[in-house]
Image (cartoon, rainbow, N blue to C red; front, side):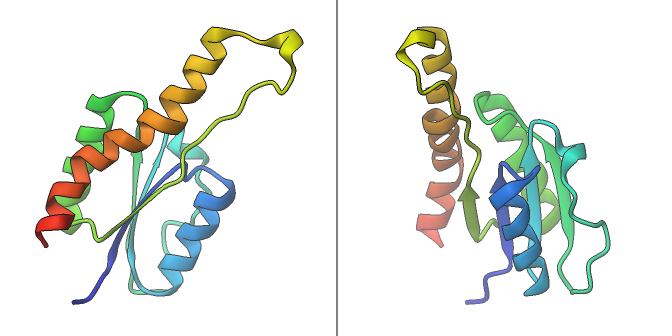
Amino acid sequence: MTLNNVLITGASGGIGEALAKLYLEKGWNVILLARTINNASIPKKEKSEGKVMRISCDVTKFEDCEKAVQLAREEFGPIDLAILNAGISGSDSFYDFSSENLKRIYETNVFGVTNFMELLLPEMIQR
């Protein structure tokens, strides 16, 4: 079985951007997801056979995740690999503690992952 479609969340910079470049170099089709996708600095034309798709997606919103997966499948077919990289951090200080900030962190770092697990695992398990 050949794997060739990778979905990467948090792809507007850092690890997500670096992974996107790596997979493109290997010829994979790369689906980049980020809240502000226009910040993704992956060139539109890479020197590879892989293609790039950019989708604006807030991983805390299930509807955004669902739409992103649907668009990716329509363009490339089944998603072979998902790198659920989106994440945020907050203050390390108890002096600045906020339950709202902690909720925002959990919504992104935990539920942002589980949204995609719900959408992708059934098909991946079946294949």
